[in-house]
Length: 299
Length: 263
Image 1 (cartoon, rainbow over the protein chains, first blue to last red):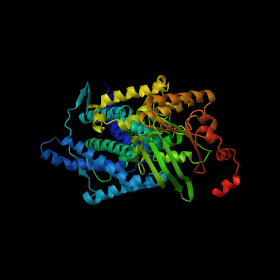
Image 2: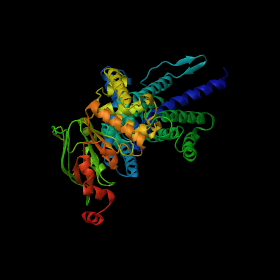
Image 3: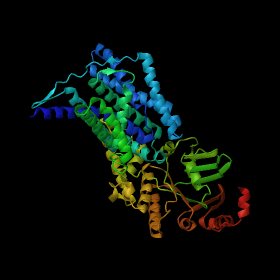
């Protein structure tokens, strides 16, 4: 196999790896948007909180004899709780206010989390330990990083599970019903508040998984790590069609691939510019996103 | 009349300076079909909104089987046994016909988040049971063949029937129908009324039906309550109500001056 092709395939795999992380984060944006019509700009910072929760739990977990990767569960629990509390405290009182109020509040929550963590844990980056010890995968002459394979497989499993959850369970039906018409849903016996809390919990939980996978690729965490990651995932959600779950998955992969290939073949420093350029293009050409308004399932 | 299922006394609601409904009372017995009539804007839907917990009445009481229901939220009203359809159809359009009905079963299903995620425990059993029951309900309104279609793709008349099937999915004792025949032609209306009659017998439902078209409720309801400007102006058998001068006036628009004063 020619060397260039091998390199190209490696870049593709990198792109898919980063893309799956974006997709996991984008799911949180899109689910929350689908159900309360709010862009939760604090979602990126939930990732940061998840990463810190994972980091601080590792010594405790290894101390009591558990493997370090159990920190994923700690991060998921911490983020789910944070998501639910944020919704109750900051967004729920504004549910009947103009959308712009809730949006500004979301930005405020984002700044609050960033600055709170900066005060508590300083702004200097902390190294994230290697927690997954996965052997590399060899396919012929191509060697694939084990963590990349793990990230891709884990994201795929989570996304399939989420899709089944939304389509096939009563809680998924409740989410779809509330996202279409919350008043009619409540008049059919669905508790709207509980459904919204659950959506925030699941979206934030996925962000927590993303945070640990992200820490395994870029092993430095700081209080601002969530803002750029969150923005890119947001672009992924818009690209796929905000509010549409399969759209977030596809959007994440596209953004990851574009970023990786730009870094590889054009210019490393242009990667972010290209990604944000995509946002502008999408908004001009097809603002409803790839999956548009009529295809796919809203949540 | 035997002991009423739904008993409403002295019900009133005020929006700012507007008394939308005042001193409304109503008793519905088991298996009874009562019509609530009145011209457009009389406050019929406002009464429904109070009975379903969308609005909290500012005065009066609502009792369901002797239990006071004031202050309950809509989903709690449903759990207690009151369900409704909507004047302007409000189905979950992007969901399948079957899922629309199954969504109404939600509050009776008990498997938890963990069991949903890992699809274990009572997940399969409950989902299967509810699917069967939802199909039965769809059959009873003649929609089972459309079960897998999106609700928005149904013809208008079928959407109205689906709303009824969905409301019944909650397992209600009292069904509130808000202008179920609005926008239907006479044939469709007659068929729908037959369906409503049959369902009432099969399920032992008590039904409160809103309609502003007098001719339609005349042949259907045992009892009518007529309201105008938020107050009861007549009640009794359809014949009595239809011949009540106040009702005739409200429908024909006479006594404009008196109405203007009472506003």
